[in-house]
Length: 311
Image 1 (cartoon, one colour):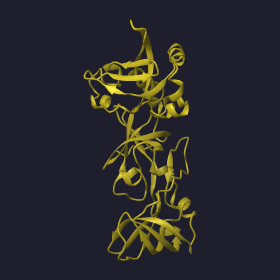
Image 2 (spheres, helix red, strand yellow):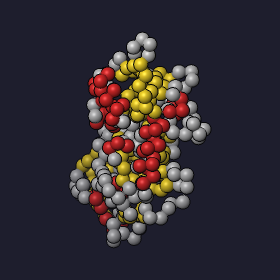
Image 3 (cartoon, rainbow, N blue to C red):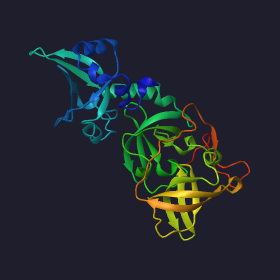
């Protein structure tokens, strides 16, 4: 739902940067109950957020800065971290000061509660949604899935090809697609990403034996070098001295074996420079109940059943 996009997307989609400099636009947005987004310019000592829209000042009271602040379930860092970041809100009041300046009273809490009630609470495992990367940790990526409400994308759910850290795949601010993997009793959502990146066969179909292509060396083992061709596809090459994890490599595709899900490669050259390809989504909308990565004739069955909780 466009109204509940990750924070920042509404600002870009509706081109609010210029529009919100117009006092008349701000007044009309208040009358219409329109959701807006802008960058917080300051968090004061009372942890209230301040904004500026042309001649109009924006003031967001402490308890209106984030869902859970009033109840004590949200930490103040959730407010402090909004400074210089695009933040969504409703204008709940317009106050004319003695100087004649207009102050818009803002509420992010109202928007987040509305988003949770009308959108997030309706999500079920397997739903494919928009997300924006907000923070990276060694164990996964935190994603804004609507109005600044976060969900966790664990590192082992990012792609089939193993990565040492989420930063090998994403950076803060990336807009991605995700599938809802599970929802706990408290409504916290865990996401998955790999199911949208195609099965083994779908990825292997992009390559042919005899081609020389670019990949990323993901690991160097005693028995060979694993080279990622796509986030959901890797091949094995014989060891070469210049191979090290994280380097790019040009590789010759020697053979492709669907029944064993094996691709044999020969490393032609390696380089420190890595060219990150745009993420290719084989599924980008709708709903998944079941996803199978492995080919039907493979003895190994790799799949995700969204109707069954992983816990």
